[in-house]
Amino acid sequence: MNKKIIEVHNSTDLPKEKHFAILSFTTISVPGYDLGDPPESKNIVTYTAYLNQQDWEAEIQERTLSKSRGDWKAIVVEVPRITTQVNVQVET
Image (cartoon, rainbow, N blue to C red; front, side, top):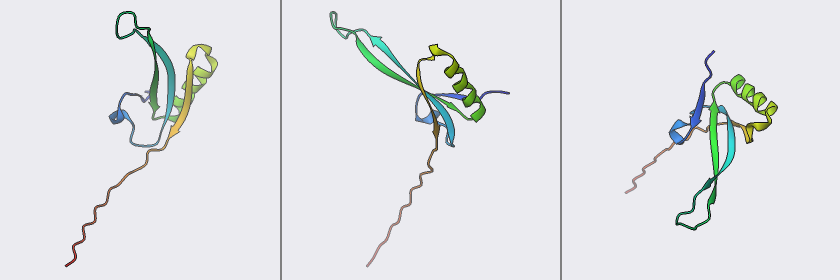
Protein backbone atom coordinates (compact mmCIF):
# COMPACT_ATOMS: atom_id res chain seq x y z
CA MET A 1 0.00 0.00 0.00
CA ASN A 2 1.38 3.40 -0.98
CA LYS A 3 1.22 6.08 1.64
CA LYS A 4 -0.20 9.37 0.45
CA ILE A 5 1.77 11.93 2.43
CA ILE A 6 2.16 15.56 1.37
CA GLU A 7 4.77 17.95 2.74
CA VAL A 8 2.96 21.30 2.66
CA HIS A 9 5.21 24.25 1.80
CA ASN A 10 2.61 26.66 0.40
CA SER A 11 -1.16 26.93 -0.02
CA THR A 12 -1.18 25.11 -3.36
CA ASP A 13 0.21 22.00 -1.64
CA LEU A 14 -2.78 21.73 0.71
CA PRO A 15 -5.27 18.93 -0.02
CA LYS A 16 -8.62 20.35 -1.08
CA GLU A 17 -10.60 17.82 0.96
CA LYS A 18 -10.75 16.79 4.61
CA HIS A 19 -7.41 15.37 5.67
CA PHE A 20 -5.25 14.53 8.64
CA ALA A 21 -2.03 16.32 9.51
CA ILE A 22 0.88 16.55 11.87
CA LEU A 23 2.43 19.88 12.77
CA SER A 24 6.07 19.62 13.88
CA PHE A 25 7.68 22.49 15.77
CA THR A 26 11.43 23.17 15.80
CA THR A 27 13.75 26.09 16.45
CA ILE A 28 16.88 26.86 14.46
CA SER A 29 19.70 29.30 15.16
CA VAL A 30 20.44 31.82 12.41
CA PRO A 31 23.72 33.77 12.46
CA GLY A 32 23.50 37.51 13.09
CA TYR A 33 23.14 39.85 10.12
CA ASP A 34 26.34 41.81 10.78
CA LEU A 35 29.63 40.63 12.21
CA GLY A 36 29.29 40.65 15.99
CA ASP A 37 25.49 40.45 15.97
CA PRO A 38 24.19 37.62 18.15
CA PRO A 39 22.49 34.69 16.45
CA GLU A 40 18.70 34.72 16.26
CA SER A 41 16.31 31.88 17.00
CA LYS A 42 13.73 31.16 14.31
CA ASN A 43 10.67 29.00 14.93
CA ILE A 44 9.89 26.53 12.14
CA VAL A 45 6.56 24.74 11.68
CA THR A 46 6.43 21.76 9.33
CA TYR A 47 2.99 20.69 8.01
CA THR A 48 2.66 17.08 6.89
CA ALA A 49 -0.72 16.12 5.42
CA TYR A 50 -2.05 12.55 5.29
CA LEU A 51 -4.92 11.61 2.98
CA ASN A 52 -5.27 8.22 4.66
CA GLN A 53 -6.33 8.10 8.31
CA GLN A 54 -4.51 4.80 8.92
CA ASP A 55 -1.17 6.27 7.74
CA TRP A 56 -1.74 9.26 10.03
CA GLU A 57 -2.57 7.04 13.01
CA ALA A 58 0.52 4.89 12.33
CA GLU A 59 2.71 8.01 12.35
CA ILE A 60 1.10 9.18 15.61
CA GLN A 61 1.82 5.80 17.18
CA GLU A 62 5.44 5.88 15.98
CA ARG A 63 5.97 9.42 17.26
CA THR A 64 4.30 8.61 20.59
CA LEU A 65 6.56 5.61 21.16
CA SER A 66 9.72 7.49 20.07
CA LYS A 67 10.86 10.08 22.59
CA SER A 68 13.24 11.65 20.03
CA ARG A 69 10.50 12.88 17.68
CA GLY A 70 10.32 16.37 19.20
CA ASP A 71 7.39 18.72 19.65
CA TRP A 72 4.38 17.95 17.43
CA LYS A 73 0.58 18.03 17.31
CA ALA A 74 -1.86 15.88 15.35
CA ILE A 75 -4.83 17.64 13.78
CA VAL A 76 -7.84 16.86 11.57
CA VAL A 77 -8.44 19.50 8.92
CA GLU A 78 -11.84 20.30 7.44
CA VAL A 79 -11.38 22.43 4.34
CA PRO A 80 -14.37 24.71 3.74
CA ARG A 81 -15.75 25.20 0.27
CA ILE A 82 -15.81 28.93 -0.38
CA THR A 83 -18.01 30.29 -3.13
CA THR A 84 -18.41 33.83 -4.37
CA GLN A 85 -21.68 35.19 -5.66
CA VAL A 86 -21.89 38.46 -7.53
CA ASN A 87 -25.24 40.18 -7.80
CA VAL A 88 -25.55 43.22 -10.03
CA GLN A 89 -28.79 45.14 -9.83
CA VAL A 90 -29.58 48.17 -11.97
CA GLU A 91 -32.60 50.34 -11.23
CA THR A 92 -33.86 53.23 -13.31
